[in-house]
Length: 503
Image (cartoon, rainbow, N blue to C red; front, top):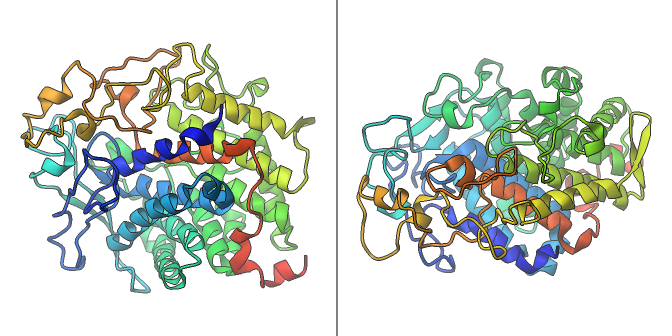
């Protein structure tokens, strides 16, 4: 398929999730300003927690997956800026990233060198709630009038590590805006210091009933590796590379365990992405001792991760129609599929750029073309090459989901304000959404390639910010049929580092 011909539409879903005072060129007529009172009651947040992105079909702002989404989008710009420019989307994608990073800067004291708390979420939605909240109500975000509590954490190396990664990666994207880039680096440094504080090492979601049911975190050593890698790229400070390659960190992250689930990139598990990001250093810089041995091990595990995505490996099962079951047949599979397609395509591009024809899976040698083929097959499946001939991206192709689980898209933009419970007439309606949330990748089919286009069944029809960030990443990596990566931009801050000068 020719992905670039529809790329501008496939990124527009992120605009559909924007919160705050929307820009005049928003381009989505059924969206308007919303969430303007978020965080307004906090004295240490002068501008409130206004802006950022709603996560999915609800109006909650979850900062953990939001930060991950910004890191992913920044990574794609760093690797494929030439592709974004080629399809006229370079300025657009940078605007989307900045919308997210500007908001993340509000969630802690970004001007301080040390902090003691971070705001982790805006809004709540408890199962079985009988009072107005983001789950009990079915309202467009523009119509919200109920109380939106804000979650605060004093411990959370996972959240802080991911936020540091997001700001550090974005600092490379905005290196041409020197003042803003430096601001991002300073803020990322503060966050990573908070993440590494020995007295703050419990997961951000632990014991919190407003977070754990939705975005619970299973650990934080993957964020240490991921965040340290991005901090190294952003600053050139070798202490971050030392941390990322410290044997204790991958050991506690179970990086060498071979566990299939740890080979699946998600908003919770950054391990496969961290391994690939650190493998990039070995492929293009090949640093000496004391980094060489650990980076070689990372390279090997990254290669084994790619092997596991191939059907011949037998590591993961596949649906009859050809979708890899990275979450073992559980609901909402496409977010994992899109992420794997991106990693596979990117690893193939690393090898092609370095003129490495393939890699070993145990004793077997495979061509990098197999990874490209895998990535294409999975993106094609998402876009309609599946037994139902259903595109799981709204607005793409002749047949796509019409009852997307999304409050704003399902409520008419008719000038009327629908109440908290009054909006359920639209949430429960059997008709197609009146507003098309173009570019939204829904949760996806079941393990037998089945799909029910029913708004209330969110395990089929709900899009998420993180899922769509992965789709954007996969699409841009495959745009133009390849073309390699920008080899050098990511190394700008380390170009004068001694380990670079020696090679």
